[in-house]
Amino acid sequence: MSQIIYVGGNKGGVGKSMVAIALADHLRHVLNRSVFLVETDTANPDAAKCIGTELDATLAADTRTEAGWQIMLNAIEQHRDMTCVINAGARDNDAMRRFGDYLHRGAEALGMPLTIAWVINDERDSLLALRDFLETYSGRVQIVGNCFFDETARFTVYQDSKIRLTIEARGGTLLPFPILPRPLAAAIKTDRRSPATILADAPLFERIALEKWRADCAETFAPLLTEHPFATART
Image 1 (cartoon, one colour):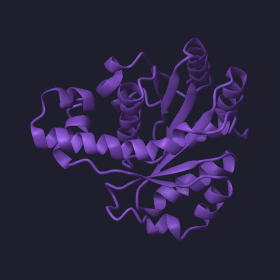
Image 2: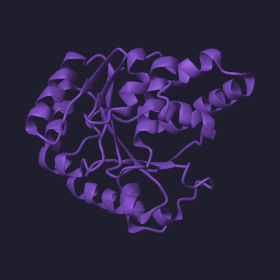
Image 3: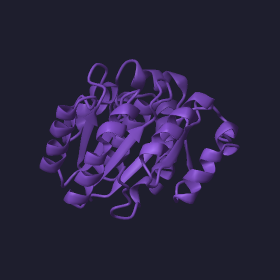
Image 4: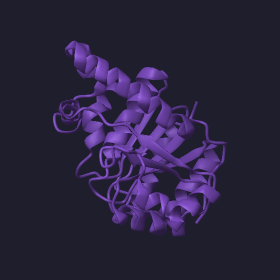
């Protein structure tokens, strides 16, 4: 199944790259899909460095410029039979405001469903970035709450906000992203070892913890993979 999944957040430190890595791992190793990973933070493409060699294709495209969007969209067309995961860089809102219509039109032209997954932590700043994004994008947005920052998965700041009402009115919901034990999270984020690589030689507890995390990720990602075709909105 071909699809475009945009993993955004517009704030450094919320865990976008970890979500993108987990999503790419789920698509490739659990669902056995062909995956094309696009990094828009060309200076620090964490996800590609971690899991890129296990995927079918990767690309770094600087979406702060129109030329970067040209490179990205033409590459998506070349890999239109794959699931495309876009790991958006921090402060990508301005690029989406200026050029995001290219992505919406491109998805429609290629007949590929476009899904927006917006990662938040428990801070109000991540909601301010989300509010700005919603001003430029009027379609469905799925919220991924990183439980690393809120183990209760309540995300009270989001739940008590008017933004939640907007998200739900558009058909979105809050999806909790599970916590991975810190040594395993560090192996992925800092050492840039993919989940599959870790599983290949990890001791028993680490294997069990990683497989449980994968199973929990599957529940989180399920709504992202069942979007209706052309659940897109132009700016």
